[in-house]
Image 1: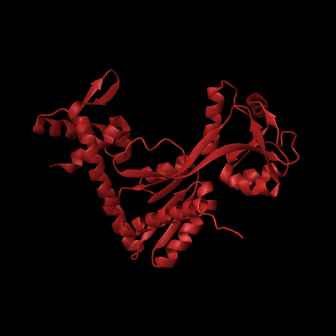
Image 2: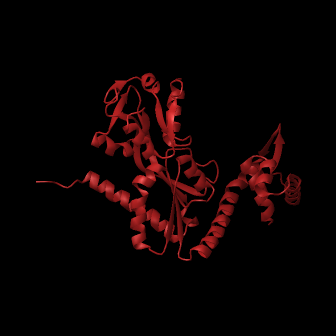
Image 3: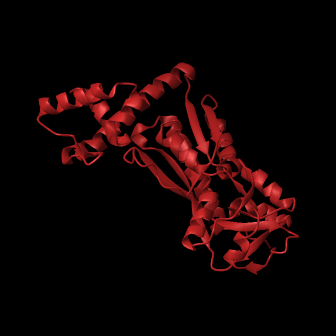
Length: 311
């Protein structure tokens, strides 16, 4: 079996064109096309056909995608294991998390894991949820923690995604703002100056979606930061309004430095998810990290449902 040609076919299939596959693989377009056509003739099959200006998969081409996806993902995993072993013989976990995850959850999990596996190196990357999922999909991360986003468009047979926490987005202002603890309309709140994260953050994408659903013009983002803590501090200082995770905002709401704005007919629930390669594609220490996370969640839920009784 010519796996090199199958790799060419797979790349054309997931990128949608020979041109994009050529750019990704650094192989000329004629060479890719010729090798795929030769493979088709030798096996008396047709994998790709042109319809209009588009390259589309034939029925047999579609059937091959899932097993090839798993096969090449395993090959990437083998290559990564070899590279990781050369750099880190005792193991290496790459965790990508959004700002909520790296400020509230991942530090505790990483610390607990290192106490049991001190020899395993942990690399933590903080970025927005869109980039987190891209890192997972491109095998640049072993574990991804992110807010609700669309799952990767391909490699769906390679990854598992598990819900960790339920959360919601809330509108927040400084405690002395005229909207503090008030109920206002969506149109009123959107007319205010906003302080938000960069494009690609889950909260910002949800805010855009709310505006589209209500056919309201998107707010003016007067200040933009790459971290949610910076956003919160700017709001506390007294300028503008923001739309942030309730989990992150709650300590400031409890302190009275932030205030929630009740917006009519807006409830924006979302979840925190963990994505990772399927168990058969993982190293054992990565599975141990995932097991630790799930154990922590179980213990948290137990404490919530069985609070200590005070006399």
